[in-house]
Length: 632
Image 1 (cartoon, rainbow, N blue to C red):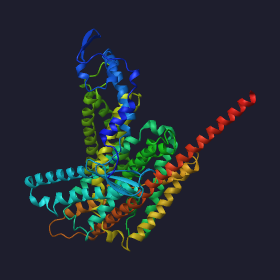
Image 2: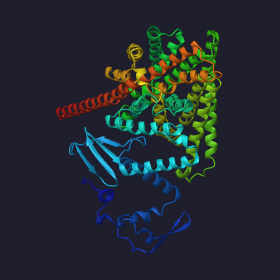
Image 3: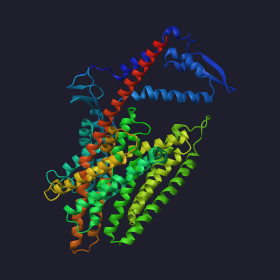
């Protein structure tokens, strides 16, 4: 058993450290008396009997607080909340960003490297391979009971076939829960993105003991809806990261990094794919190349935030350059892939394809900007019903429910843009409108430097991150794995060909990223960090990879009873499967490489820079001391 103190003992120790000496405490009045004074002309009575649970040395402070007016009390409350958040809440252990991730931290030097212990409250601690993993067994059992309760309720409310193995709900829920927990746990220990583990476990689950045995009940509709909802969240978060004030720090290199590596990688991939795959139409090679070439915000942004939360890379540097570029590239990449898919499936001429593509680009951008401005003022009108405090600020317990509702409406509008775009065969324009909608909303919150609006933007962004981490990411990558066959992905007819595309296009991308950083003011190591971190692939591939397969399935479903699919449709089905499998291959490899390279390489780089600055400052101080001694 572990000898660590319990929560109550730790709290007592912390309070004892904060306690002031008795000599410094002014004598207090006897309890159960009344202290009256005037507060802005109003008499306030304080019953000291209410202070029985307050430490004695704080009684004078309580008396002094009761002499303050309303505005002073609000300032004191804000200062107290800030200090408590900084010094108390920040020291609490991090449980991970998702419900399926346990607490994992590195083992300290004075702790055992291998042990199994119970630290109370049903939590089991396992220390292995330099990692200390906390398994909240009691909480996990309670969650399992809740899942069983929900299942039994649905069992009595819906047809039993949906809740049995092979059923629509059973197979979908099972693969999401299993892949999220097992994949998230493994990647948490190995310090890899959880989405990689979710994808790996989902692929294995789909192929045990043979393809589709455990996932036959997952219908095409749930896969299509999950892909489009995932694309919605990706587009919104990309728009949140692409705002003018962030781009303005290094706008030239931001634009070059957003367009040039993606364009060159797409061309290289398309040329190689058209040579190794039997694509009779070059548009299929472009679709595969454009989808596989889009950088993933789900890999870049968490790695950047990890380093920035440790105090590294703030301001204009390699990290801000990647964050400001990733949103623009995602928008352009999704637009390009969607327009080429429309050209294939709706047989557009070159002139129609060009005009429709340009119209979607500018029309979607204009619509997104208009909706972003309108939504900003809608939020301000919605906040008008919340009564403000005497200092002009909004009370948080009333503001946060309003912002939660605003976030829901925000996601609803964004989903409407994406789904409506697909419904009217203008998917590229819908995605562009979604990105500009979020970006305009962000710009409106930041343009005047209003702290309240900036806090509002951060709150909505935090809620969007929670939606992605806890809901859309597990569902999206579990559904992606449910569509893949290991026999097809690793077959002799496919795997060597996709590896040729992978190595060739990735080499072109790395070279392009390095070249566009010329005259950026970054050191060689910082440029290499951007090269590695900005090649991650994950979210866009998971959302767009299955789109072609869904379109082919829609064509086949539209055939009349007894009508056999044509040779053209069968070829399109094979090509769509190639696109989907190639997208998954890029995710399985580049998500790991980019995440590990960004976090580990960035940490080593910035720590080395910090040591050099410290040594340089010490040398400068020593030189100044010598000069002063010589003058004396």
